[in-house]
Amino acid sequence: MKHTIILGALAALTLSSSCALMAGAAAGGVVYNEFAENKIYEAQFNMDSEAVWHSAKATVSHTATDPIEVDRDLRKLVAKIDGAVVIVTVETFDLDQSILRIEAKRYGIIDGEVASRVLTKIREGLEGEL
Image (cartoon, rainbow, N blue to C red; front, side, top):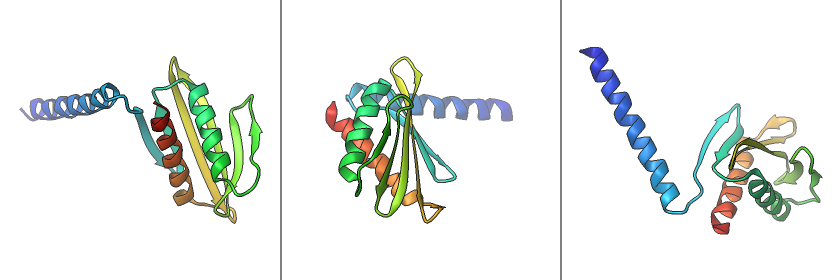
């Protein structure tokens, strides 16, 4: 009986999460998953990595206080934002899926607040492009 209740709860949780993702996709929004491990923010977008790369590059270049360093081949950029060194990378995860990673360090210490703000700005930029 305990296993049936647990399986039922897991199924309900999975269905509600799937419905929320499908509702976001149907509404035309940017569908993504986000998590932070050791204050390195990672987001998976259901978008082509080139689109995410161009949006990230444009957003960071407008936000940075100094010129940004760009490695086009690796889709990696380094910028200084609010006194922190921010590293942004974009990787292809699957067809029309990409992973965005953001790490920020101020004085050699990880600054999750800046990384989170940069991720939010990039996500909002992607939503504005739709």
